Length: 178
Ligand code: PRP
Ligand code: ADE
Image 1 (cartoon, rainbow, N blue to C red):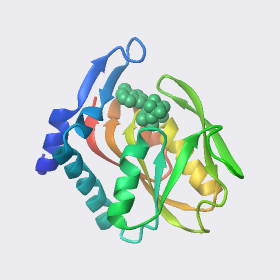
Image 2 (image 1 turned 30 degrees about the vertical axis):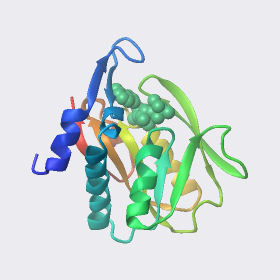
Image 3 (image 1 turned 60 degrees about the vertical axis):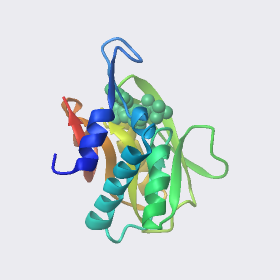
């Protein structure tokens, strides 16, 4: 690629066959976090993208679990609020809820009703886009609480699963795998 920071990430990502189920090639980003300079480079790359593409971004939404590794760091870099989307039963207060399919099962996501102000512009962060069910559910939740999803931001996109076709609006990925 044209960016050394992305080359370092690409070299560091692991691929594990048949995890968590037979036939799934699991792309593991945790090795990136074992190299502080590589992780820092990835966060700066993602933050710069948001600054350039969405300079009016007013918040970062992070998706449990692995979106929590990247979202808060990007929010800090941009000096905007971080707001979590969590698996069901974890968040207190009044909630909105969406059930979704993923590459290897189904799950339910929740968000607090008062977590965004009306019309707040946000970018939704996760580690990886597979079938797109997770990101599509998050876009729906953001809309339900009155926010505006500017884009979905992921490190890895599994392009053959065509996840981006399921999502209203744009998705930005940094590494694409077949
Ligand atoms: C993984 C990944 C994404 C999602 C992508 O999370 O971190 O959130 O799957 O899949 P999709 O595009 O097919 O919806 P997972 O549900 O395994 O949970 P975790 O982050 O808690 O490990
Ligand atoms: N989440 C959904 N599909 C995945 C995959 N193939 N690798 C890592 N995380 C995933």
